[in-house]
Image (cartoon, rainbow, N blue to C red):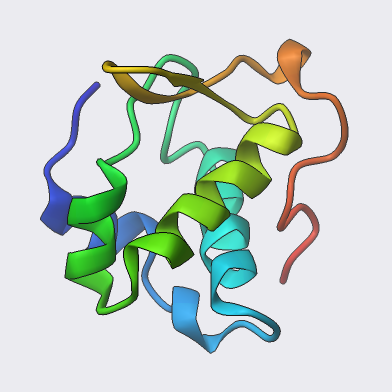
Length: 102
């Protein structure tokens, strides 16, 4: 399901910037946590990097690198020209970022 950008910022990523470490890792961990909590389902499209970066007040590079972290963990699939989509849990190559966060 496509959700509006406001939902991502207010609900799925609320408090993302309170994490420790580089901002891109905090963003990736918060997105992974949203998947773990069932807020985001397999097949859901993540917001465009540029729009998300603008809404969160970070550089586009921060958003891109966060998405790359998720892709490296097998949590999302990046489709050129279509967007970034959450993969099914069976496609994950390792425990997603943010798993076990309290």
